[in-house]
Amino acid sequence: MSEDEEAIARAELAMHLRRQNVASRATLAVLESVPRSLFLSAPHKRLAYQDRAAPIDCGQTISQPTVVAMMTDALELEPTMTVLEIGTGSGYQTAILSRLAHHVYSVERYHLLSELAAERLRVLRIDNVSLCVGDGHDGWPEHAPYDRIIVTAATPAVPEALVSQLKLDGILVAPIGDQEHTQELLKCRLTADGLEGERIADVRFVPMVAGVADVL
Ligand code: SAH
Image: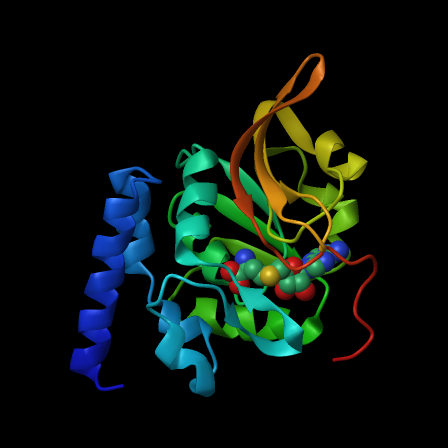
């Protein structure tokens, strides 16, 4: 794809997202500022500005732009906030969060994905993100509590450790359900009585898998 073609595709995706009406202008402006093609490997770059999930390394996927917009918007981010992300993947969602929050901590179970994401964030000169390789079921206790938590892999239930690392009145956004069925994207707020969730949309994410991947 030539630079001109890429610019046109990028503008068309931006217009498409605006028409979807799934996120605020501020959220969409940030989505538009991050070049999604940087987060895909050469054979998949042509899919960068289509509104669909696309393959990344380790059999995982980069999320669909509409879903990234919805999830980002649901977090109601403010520039003072710290965010925990489970499932760094390509680092695309991470980059977007970093432009709306004070600091993003992101956990990924594949070493390779975490390394590739770190390199892309360096290219974009993003310096308010910390990445680690670990099992997101445990969260990242050293930096807790977080104002916001976002899970980008599907889990049948919100892991207890994540709830315990969320500030009171904090928001957690996660796809809840198993792989066979459509999952529900939930936006939950932590109240004194526990998590109170509202459904945002039906989605389809790769599953959250226990343990650190032992390949790569
Ligand atoms: N937000 C990412 C989406 C990545 S797909 C993007 O836009 O690219 C979900 C990611 O969650 C995958 O990279 C997968 O390896 C990771 N994942 C799955 N289970 C995990 C776990 N238990 N801990 C950390 N990461 C996990």
